[in-house]
Image (cartoon, helix red, strand yellow):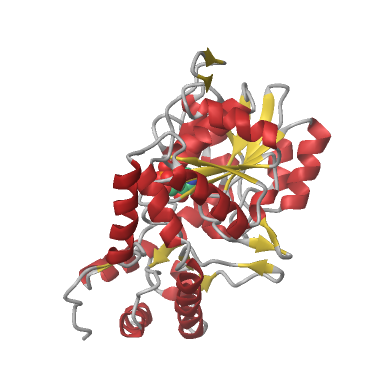
Amino acid sequence: MINKLKMPVFVTQPALPPLEDFTELLREVWQNKILTNNGPFHQRFEKELAGYLGVKHISLFSNGTMALMTALQALKITGEVITTPFSFVATTHSLWWNNIKPVFADIDPVTLNLDPWKVEAAITPQTTAIMPVHVYGNPCNLDELKKIADTYGLKIIYDAAHAFGVKVNGDSVLNFGDLSILSFHATKVFNTIEGGAIICHDEKTKKRIDYLKNFGFVDETTVIEPGINAKMNEVQAAFGLLQLKYIDENIIKRKAVANLYRKHLSNIKGIRFLNDIEHVTHTYSYFPILIDEKEYGKTRDELYEELKRNNIFGRRYFYPLISQFPSYRGLSSATPKNLPVAEQVAKKVICLPIYPELSVDVIERIIKILRK
Ligand SMILES: Cc1ncc(COP(=O)(O)O)c(C=O)c1O
């Protein structure tokens, strides 16, 4: 019998910088008396973040959802957009809020990302863009998606909310597609409490995005179109600037957690986990495992409940599929017959706790429960 943990262990715990250092920065904000609207911390953070990520242009946002919604506006996307049902609801909600019809395509059973061949099959004369997600930070099939987009004249907006710092052959995954968005929500690898960003490739597009996130203002008297208020404030930006100092250390700790799980899980029958991919620099945002009920002898939900009884709160990301929620399930592309792989994966997946301060002791307890 394993003793129940005294403190609950959640799927994640936010990484926080030293409070004293943050207080110092807050003092500066108080002295500046600038709280938002592209203030000094916002400008510094944008520059340093672009340098850290290895991208040309970045626009900071109040959160990732507003970044997604603004990205669609920036490219004037309309009609239908092909996307994955295996993601967080914000991916598809951003389409709905823009009056765009989501068209779901199935995922690849190995990467769990949009299957490019299913994307191609879902194209209609109304399709204007593809919105793939780098699920769990694993890069999509970038080359195939680009080929399809180029052939059919479509835009690609990557939802890279899970892919902070991820690189492919040394190049940021954020440099692919027309635009990429990030989330800096408290649960993410890198957080600014709430926050997000759009990554683009040229100055002109960045300008347009910056106008859109500030009501459409170009200057005091010029409003180019109905923009929104999606600006990151100075406190968030100062927090982010400080977080950048610790991000590498935090990723190293996350990698150690992932490797310890992998070492122990490799000899448990019926549990599949995702391995690192060659030429990819991973940042270990999630640790999903897939339960094969027959081989493992227990269903995913039985395991989920068992962990809960032990005060360990895994999350069934992503279950239910987005396509199963009331707003979307009436769409013809949402039918389970169209999404057999995603339907299967959503029944099998559970994300185990992963965060920099997760102790070896707790990981070993989790493994013991998984072995039982
Ligand atoms: C894949 C994905 N897209 C979008 C979002 C939305 O980001 P935010 O919470 O910063 O609005 C999240 C997570 O929160 C996410 O996981």
